Length: 95
Length: 336
Length: 97
Image (tube, rainbow over all chains, first blue to last red; front, top):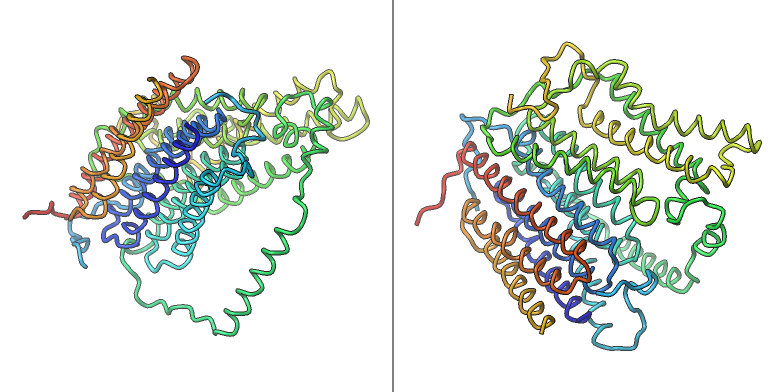
């Protein structure tokens, strides 16, 4: 099973690497934040699979910390970084 | 799935070519993604993109520490990198002028002359070759020798709070200085909450807040046996408090004065008192008598963890909370 | 037998992670991408957790895996709503054919 867990972890990491394209492309801040969210979830699964491969229980704690903090970035983003401005529609998608 | 001794985390040199290939693929993908993100974090023309890249870099750094068989550091990186650092940067972006999510076109691309680039590449490669040829450095052996006298089972906590407690004391002093410097710049900036209706947010925070407190104490307790301890615990406590603030809770008036200051200073004070008290017994600063070592380490760890949490929250507040604020009694109060 | 079921669940989870990534890259706007992303938060991670829980030695580890999944589930749902509301407030219109 160790090889299977490790192989799955490699697959997830490849997913992460591809999802980076969305951070580069955007176009809006919401899209970039979304890729951050996906990456957070993928990192949790990655740590769980590494736990499966190695049996180190501390990795579950790391995954638990990630899971607890999953909402942190988005909440700060919505509350602080991207204050809504009804007049502004400069966020239209552009290629 | 069976628990293995920690030094066989990833089997190296087992000779199985399939496993070696998987490990190599994992490392290559991790390094590639980290390099792309680091480059974006420094050079992206769009500041928001830079911040998101930096936050993702933090996530992958935690994974890299796991791969380097350092779960303690992975835990601290997860708690700080995925939580507070990102929140601080995002909140800072919100205070900057203009729309930070727009590309800035004016910045010139950095051009490195070809000879310098070639020289740098050769230099970096030779440094890497030398580093790989050297014997692996480390003080692991000496720590293992000293562990029986440490008064605690976890080697990392023993290093942080016993063998090298002087360093940790100074780290906490530096954090406190940062808070003092920030407070001297002005008052807190939480008075500009978003008007966006978010009914789910207070509900989520009410649910999560007790879990944050529980995990803080879980990590403090774990610090005595394995990966855990004051720094990740403090970071989680701060994350919980910051979430409560973002959901609309206010710093209650009754804690903004003396109680807040005592909480900020508690870690440093406990550290100093313990260091001086054991001096009376042994004549050496920070030389714990073996009988009392576990108790003293626990006292310092709990005080430091709580203090670190409050200090990080104070940094997020961005200034001294003024006691004239409108007060919500409920610490995880409603959405205004 | 347990191994085979665990293997199947984790593979299925990986498939949903993959579809989430593809959706994030291929879908036309933030709202549709949100739809792809939520599969990763809920189904994909849930399946991976379930597969690992089948392999776990004791109940405490299973409880921890369940807790991790529930936390990501709840956070993911809230964050999706927050991002969608913020995007709407910023004048981003949902994509139409």
